[in-house]
Image (cartoon, rainbow, N blue to C red; front, side):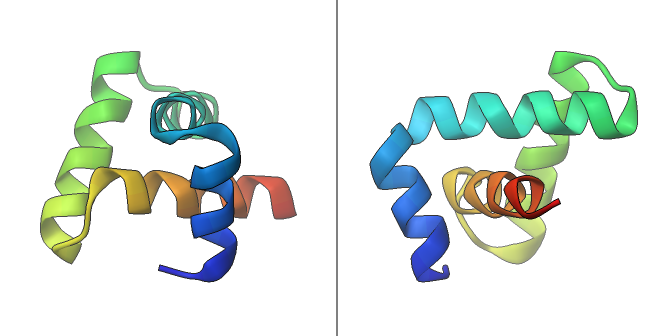
Length: 65
């Protein structure tokens, strides 16, 4: 995980980061809340990383747009 992603988690807290990532996926992909969360879980499993880490990266990317 990058230091920027770690900073985002520290500033917002894990729940808020995951919530924002879900909202970003819903907006970007036009999916439901449940589907967005499932995508996070699947990506986490495939990458062997935590949902929190994946979510932080999504939030970080979204902030950079």
